[in-house]
Image (tube, rainbow, N blue to C red; front, side, top):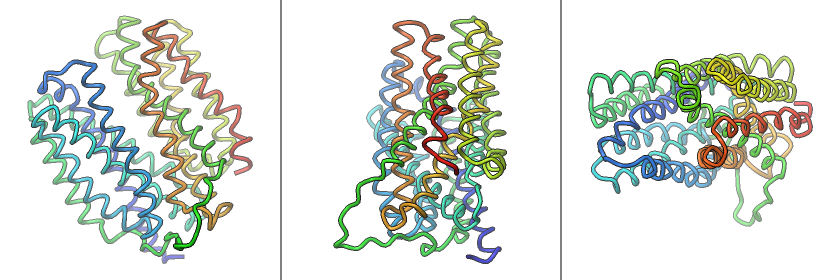
Length: 389
């Protein structure tokens, strides 16, 4: 066990890493309308372009897990922060549509390296602390996303170009990364030795099922982010300001839920927390959609945020614990996190086209019952999958 000061520094460095990652994503999302206008592309071509970032995210998971297992998550998180600096300015250059595609892939790739390694590092810190702390780390990511989006909105309103914006953010990330570079755990803290003659182990089925839980949570999060404003404005004719409220309040509840998630998990256990969370998210969303007005949408999104907030953090927490205990020697914590997040994050890729297709065939309001049902499935099966943890 590290001395308290070493643990405290590593914890603070990881909290900042989550904040930076969320900040970089939030500031990128805030300028998507400007990317579209500058490149003069259609909605469908923009959607296809953004898919390049998702491909980059998924492409980085396996190699990053192997590096984190070989060298430890601390060093990879440290260097991942510096690599992240490269991804942000490249997107802001907007030299051409083809450059946009390439830069989005690179941004997704480097963001995923940083994301996976910091989650593995958070799992190592949980193992040292002997208590749940993962939700607090993810709360910092949500705060970073909110602050990045807000700052990006201010930059856009001031007419600051995406190029200047991106390079400014890159400098901020560089300064913070230099300050925290020596605070992370040493590689020996969670290095996983792999011998050359060791045969590849079959991935534990339990981790794949946990990944499917995370996939359901990711679809719920993506649905709230992508469709709340559209549903409020186009289906219930809300004003532009009111149409922003579902996502804003959803984000506030996500931060609040994640800040309190560790306390609930330590007191009641993850199985009970996921059972309650899924019921609150699914039941709340169904209640809101059934109201048939914009106030119902707002209420539904508030309850969805409160419920879904802890799903992905708790899933990652459980998979790290399983790797360190039940599957010790079979799979490293980094590889476990990569496997689970790889399945879970596919929900962010699958969700938008799935819900969009159902919305076109039926209505957007009916399509939103899909994430509600997924949340209820999480609630009904959490105890069986997670057990007594």
